Length: 300
Image (cartoon, rainbow, N blue to C red; front, side, top):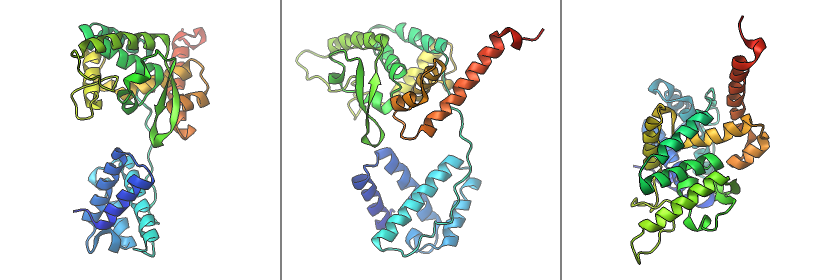
């Protein structure tokens, strides 16, 4: 059972900081885990030794460094809130050291594999194929997050715009460009989408409507559709996901000579350090190309 203090903290995060449902759910799990693991009054009564023992026990339980880092953040923010509310006069989490974690390189696809996904999508019958082409084209052309892509409203594309205004993390808006191929894919899907609507039935506000509770296509369903397209294209489906298309967008831009700051803006990253990871992917690819094709790099 969640303590009143944790509930108050989560309510503050939702109302004052506009935390997303995903963030709130993750923090609720993190705090509940700590609350259940600490004897003698839970988080509000815990001392430094109890908090440090709980945190030290995360790794032996098999939790990743990234998960441990998030739990550390949740605990530290909770105690700052508790001190502000007067529930505590000290912060027992203050000595928790951030776990060291190597930042994995993002998975991505090469250009031929993206074309393969589009070809496999085009092979599907009727509206299903047109919808899949539009999804892949939009994700790859604009670098949209899956929530941004599936949450697109149909009114945003009715007039064939050259770019979309996307509301990303933290409610920040940015421009997402649409190339000619993506715009043609959207036009074709709109015709099929409108034709599928029963006569006199009200139109859905979503570009990709479905019978899900949200009213639009879900990330899980889109991921399943991508898995099938990957299989049809001869690509290991474990290498393909909605987010991988976003990675491919960023990587291919950098490989083509785009400025890192431009890519940061297009992806909606608040910190350029988040974008810089793509330079490693692009550099690795360019090194492979040089080693494969440059005459002085070849063995005799």
